[in-house]
Image (cartoon, rainbow, N blue to C red):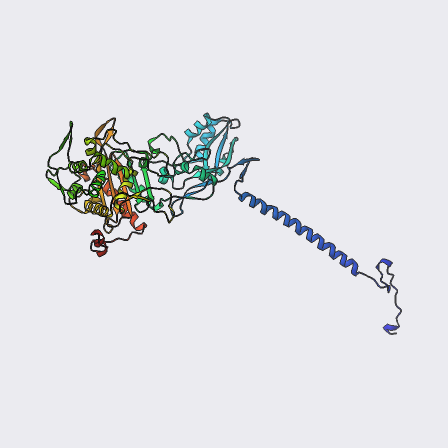
Length: 572
């Protein structure tokens, strides 16, 4: 029997699974199952897309301006703040003020079992914990007190391990100043309400609060550090009570450095009434002594009343009413204008000023800005104190920096205006746009400006000059010393001096000015017990220039350089 001869078994096919010819139909069921699976996949994929879309939307929402960030603590949501305050940077984009979410330790007096025991344990767990500050916070607050701030994750873990009930961490947005004291008098600080209370934080409070973008200052972190460091060294070395200084671009008025010592940490502001919060550069009014002879010499030369080799008799002191005008180191002979400047003669300067007279002197100083508040972007900038009655006596004393009190910034910008070619300098701590030059009206002619640069260079290089300790090989520093007895309670203190030095470099074509004031320096054996500007402030200026000149791209040049010699002679 063959396979074909075997009987065939009949298979019963249900009617709903049979086709027209009676055969089984499975294709429809398979297709239906596939379709159902596809639909389920689409639904699941759609759900995943919705979930990830919601997450992405939330991330985008958190990044939007005006959003209030929330931090979860013990089941509570706490707002961190509204729009983050804009950063403040130096001229090169280095951040000097920014925002940071920090952890603060909150003390709940209703839950902590024993305050003294808790503080003792916290003190052991956190090196540097200020127990006195914490006790004051607890005593002066309601149920909740913030007893420590800016805690690191490690510090938070240490507190957690104590297991003390009633201690919680709060997250809050705080203004942070990474450079600490370095920019304190310029940048200022904010209050608990996140608003500016001093410095540019106050001046530009609305702009910074809007969070539009970083505020770029004209200051240079590298220059600021060098100036701060050298002032601190001088203040310590000479046991001074204070010191201040500026670095100024004489071509556009940008301040690259501004330091006032003592200073403060804006991250931890305590008592703003303390003297360390006082900005001497813009708010301090001082009689700055012989540095004013730069103005007296400049106005005399520019008025055509004398040339550099014209002579004035400085043999004898000048009697004015019941007072005498004397020279600190008298030459007791006739002196040329150049010699008056180099020997810093009060007698010669007084006689030069009397040629122009009180009205001419006032008009010249007024054009330099010595009678007005400077337009610098800092709160508290002061207007100079000028004589109410300006007769012959005042004309002579103002000629050598007595009887008129100005800020160090006034002196710096005034000198810059005389040496930069003769145009008025308007100072700024905000970086200027490329097309802005920051210069105003002409104060003196270019010829007078060249003469002043020559005199200031000679004051440093000549053996008769008083500024030799400011010289820096390769950078042709020019300058002038100043020493004045401090005026207190209407009288001049014999032993309390303000010693200063204003320097420019390169002297043949000045780009930068450095001015340093040291308050009440004490003489040392190495200075033969002298504490005058030539012994105290001049070395500080030289040290600053030596550090910042390479940073600012000023190439060293030497006396045998034909280009330098030509420039000093006024040859194009």
